[in-house]
Length: 345
Image (cartoon, rainbow, N blue to C red; front, side, top):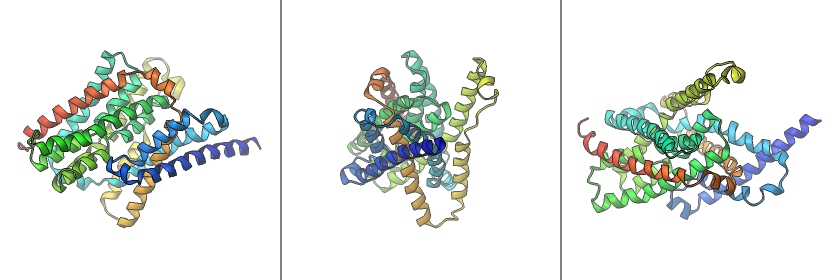
């Protein structure tokens, strides 16, 4: 009987998050939201945070396991299915220069962000999540890294907030600089610059579309290559976390001293490989991608539901300072590489 009650309570939490996610999809489909390229995932975390700071204390605590289930298990399923948006053919379509620029951007942004975070005496997890989100693919990368390092939900929400803010700024800033002639790049190079430096996939799409089809096509493919780089980053993070636990004398007690491999990241890569064979009808792939967006929206909403204003105050201004520094780095380094490396390759 008790087991049945626990399952019922968990189901209540899952249904709550599902309803919020449906609302996020409806709001995200509005023209105003589309014009801002704000995906349902971003709307979802905002709704979750509104709930956390209003109705959260009026609902039974027994619903919490269902909310946590959405922020953990459903999140990993969503990341695996994210692979249906990519193919290995995308990598070859943009050439070696784009792959090299992406690799440099991802590596330097994450490593540099962690170092700057230490200099700012920030919370280590928030600095890492912010750096991963800035370096790879915004909210989805933050979610993936959160699953690898297993940190507190509010830290994830803080990191997501930083990459959303500066990704949105970049989405409007890049087209303005390009049209004014301040950024003097060819359409192909501008696409590589955009895809390799803007945070969210939705932001890269929005900025690319504002600069023309040539820029847009290159930007989207280069952005997708950055998404693929989430896999090796998650493997490195998991290895680092396991080694740190062993050195601290906690590894054997926690999980036998073994390295925890993020299998969802491996399956994400497997799905990309499967999708590269183009075996499924386009309509089915579109449905899977829509369903996947809904799952990720549920995960984001659940994370928001565990994030109160007090926790944001606890994090302070430093995460946004770090995100701003990384934003400037992405713009400067990305522009220089797109201008001088692309012509060489």
